[in-house]
Length: 481
Image 1: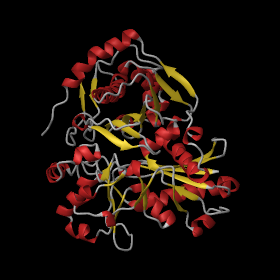
Image 2 (image 1 turned 120 degrees about the horizontal axis):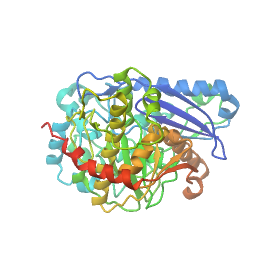
Image 3 (image 1 turned 60 degrees about the vertical axis):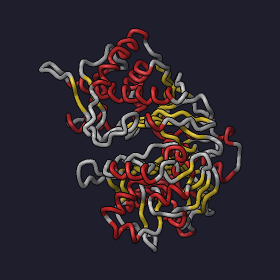
Image 4 (image 1 turned 180 degrees about the vertical axis):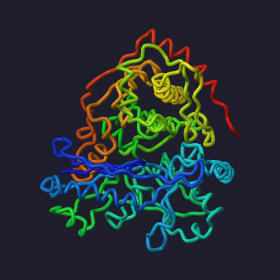
């Protein structure tokens, strides 16, 4: 038995997986986000621990016999948020999240301090990454910065609580701007640019390697026969790739979670930081992931549901299985700024084309189309780096909507594939990494693609209509700075 724990932005999800890679049970607990002012997003690390423990307590109550046989645990986590710890490993402040835009000025300072940043990290300095956040804290909260003895990303902090060991995997670390992406090791120059050193950083391992063991008292709490091994794990998107078997060049997948991304595994680094293509280490050795990222995806649908005061399912039901034509309304999904291709933390969303006759369905359809158009921007940015997307699998909560996947197929003009359990991708991928850390099996033998349950093909007429709409949609973007 193996556990996969996905520490997301909106929830912690834990899945229990057996030796035949069947999900035996799953539990989820919601998380809340604090926004002390516009563009600021934070979370209390204590929430992560409370939610994780609650999922495991629930699994013990419902599947105690199976939980007792767990041998390996894999962790997946939201990327980029630094958790600052004092000398006693206690958090000094809430974690500044990946979608926080406060450190835009520090990004410019960081690139001035270290001219080789893009070449070494494979990424452009952006407010979402961890390193600029440390410069902001050093300037605005100098006492906190001075007291900082350790900096951990969210799932590494969770592992510290679970095991007592400060360890990070290279995929999550490559979203910090402190990692030499080619060497898969901390960059001393990168750390020095933020007045840190290796002493502040956790030990690095590959995602499928053993990293630690569960504390004995926690193994006893959850009735486990032995202390399970905890794998290196992965950032949420690399873990999602492991969950759907995206471990080879030539594959691509879309993540439709709170944020969104179009990702392509590669056996080499194909950087395009000027178009805000991200370069991350994969969760398996010798592989990387190139990604275009958007800051708001399924969260746009959640926003619309709050706006209209109805559940998301009620918004989607009138749309049917597929679009007949593009919505007369256009939507920019920049509710929290945008990454690829704009790197603009202060831009905000927009509805364009409203009239007295505009109905709710037109707005909802426009919201889904706006996210799809933003992913088309990601596709083109990846294309400029030499990565062609000819088909894509979809994971994340948004993958439940057949209408949305049909829109994606037509906007991107490629086949889009859906899995039966696509929304559990990251947690399931984490469980696979937990298994690999225990058994040492060949990665390809474990990380096989799940069965696709449905494929959405582009309709030539509708794809043509969206292709005509895309340039006008792009012209709606206006930088605010």
